[in-house]
Image (cartoon, rainbow over all chains, first blue to last red; front, side, top):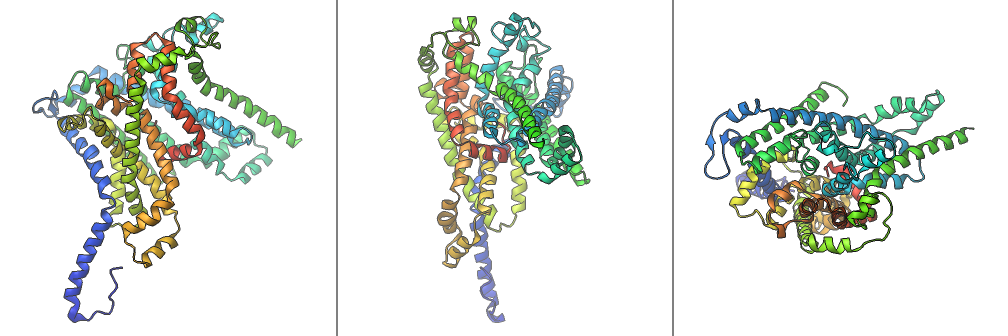
Length: 311
Length: 277
């Protein structure tokens, strides 16, 4: 558009080129005006506070007055804080749980759905509905169902199966797994839909060949389906690892990290430090650790991909 | 032979799929059924149909949970955020899809970093910044945050719509001397409304259900959205299952109805965005 004067003589070039640079400049500004508002907003709400957070993590601050610079003291304290390590370990357990149970259920649901036509829509909707329901409502349901007096445990005990007849969320050994179970009940249907989309794209001829070779349905799944949807599978694994280290709602609502920090995760630990104990600097250092953790995960993924792992 | 084998094998599929569907829906059905019982009846008859359906639970929950106020708050937050996000994201999506931006690689990189920074890194300083600016306990303050959080997702979604639009329309307008903004307004916007609908639905759902920022930035009861005020309500009436179940149903009905009506768009938008609910 700006190169509309190909025949300009050398004599007029200076004037012309300054005019074209000016026009080019306006052109560039014009184009960037489309993205400037969104960049500016993201800058103010996300980037500036993020950088500020890194600074605060090196200070002691109660939220009022000026932060006092204390160097690495928060981090030193963090590395000796039992509760923080408990939370970190719980995040790892949470990750492990989400990488197995919901993924297995998602793959099972999607694989069974991919070979039927009638009723597919119904099942898909049924599996997906918990995913669109708010955490506040889902936890309300399961606080009732996991209640020792009125819940499933009590009902099973009445019918001779007395192994769930206790306060799952009030017990130190089961609180974390109970919350993780509820969150994954809400989440696995989302995986079904993602995996189903990937499975429908698999060439049906591959299945025909496998079937003619006498492959069982499990063998077809293992040797045809899984390799064909690998990119999707790996992507969901990466997302689950990131989400699991940031999980908050279900823990905060159902147990608040208790009893006695048994279900504490890094996010609830940070939230309590920041908004109930007003140890702002300490809380910020937890946020920095969480970010480093996420960055490491993503970089491992990127490095493996660059090394030629087909993921 | 092969046919009968197929029928047999899909029968097996349906058995397992039905069990999974019951697993997914049974808890929600119990929530609905028990919202029509007195708390006493829930104790005696936790899983059966209500013997004498009690609709007063809904009236009581509506009044005591102040749903008239909190639903209003949620609607303000939802519509405000949807409008803001679409206003911000659509020009950006157009620029990424159709204009050769110098530095668009950098832009993509910045967005990737900006959207993958954990909220727990920036929520604390953001709170103190917002307090300084008088934006805490103000709907506008939270709407601004939501716009920043959800507009990158909407940008990518809308971009994928705009990339697919036929080039000829844009060329024709350019030949007529239309500027970028004119092309955007008169050609791109009218043609990408399905993208707007999908992005709007997903953003609306995310705001409706959002918890972390809602509970942090709106602390006065009369300003709270449904999600965090329902949480407070549940804690206040923790043993009153009938009442709190009715409150939960009030919150969830609009979402489920809208989802069933427009499920294709919801699923498409949510699975593309990688947003976690």
